[in-house]
Length: 428
Image (cartoon, rainbow, N blue to C red; front, side):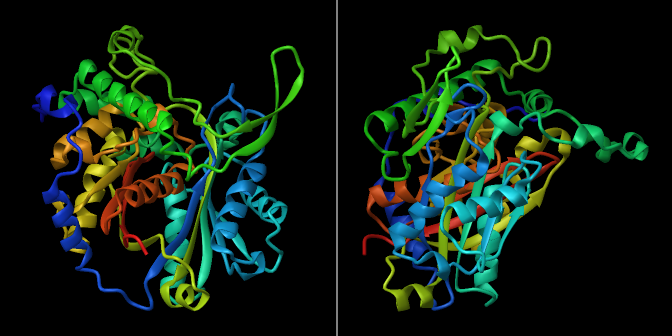
């Protein structure tokens, strides 16, 4: 058994901030990527607030309605006419009519029927994969400008999947790897904790830090620029309908370690994965407007970010949470970088066990990981998360005000990890 050794003073001590050495190495790394007219650049990245699944302000909001504000926000911010969008890809996991919802969301946003749209489901990386699909279309000359997005209503679609009515191939149960694909996600978290010796206290301390960072970010207004306020309707417990404006993430809450340690295991008797150290069931949407650099220059657009690399790697399904720990090294290998060259890592916190493992396995300084908190605090609306992470990452790098590099990464059900390298070019 591989056991992670950690000193909590290092991992959970005072925030150390960004050292001058980190700034120097990130600038040197950024200079390794000379600008090209064919670069895929990000013009705008916005998201909704994330609401609690099943009981939050978006519990009755359809996925197409969630897409409207983020589609409109990225177009308005970039001063792009709706008819100029050449393609759209939307990541989604749970909506059984995802293709319909994406198309109707497009129309509700004022984007005409001449713009094509498609959906993609790559589990928890669906939002990131949607952005990469658009980036690939730009890179190969199919389009010059498009939108990658992600959306999820776990309130409406968490139990709406038709998978249970589709018969399984009996051969699955006779094949070791195929059978592991059916393991519930919570049990895979327990498997990671057991295999790599990650304790309940380590997981709860990681979860506490996520909540503390997100709470501080929310109090200081760090999310304000990336969040698009959404007006929607919600029915209260007495059956009365109210109109509300949602502009703050609902999952962020004051948390104490003592309270986390008292929670019962959620997936396994005597286990260590709880509701407090797992990502929250959530609803939300995000969109990323991308273009070829030459097209952006022609339109006089301010460049917000540049896609510099992408990697997807498989891993054993029964410990699917280690996905980022295999995808990030592959990404760094492809781009000729090291962990030291990256300023910020946005690593999705599906479970504290797997996020903790990734940070320790790769030797990432804790202050570089999810500086504004992660999915344990903010929530994990499955298909939305990857696009949401891009927005959070770029707005954080913009606040730091230096040319810098960031990585977005997550694990995926069935056993995979994805990682994307994004450059913030610095103030214009």
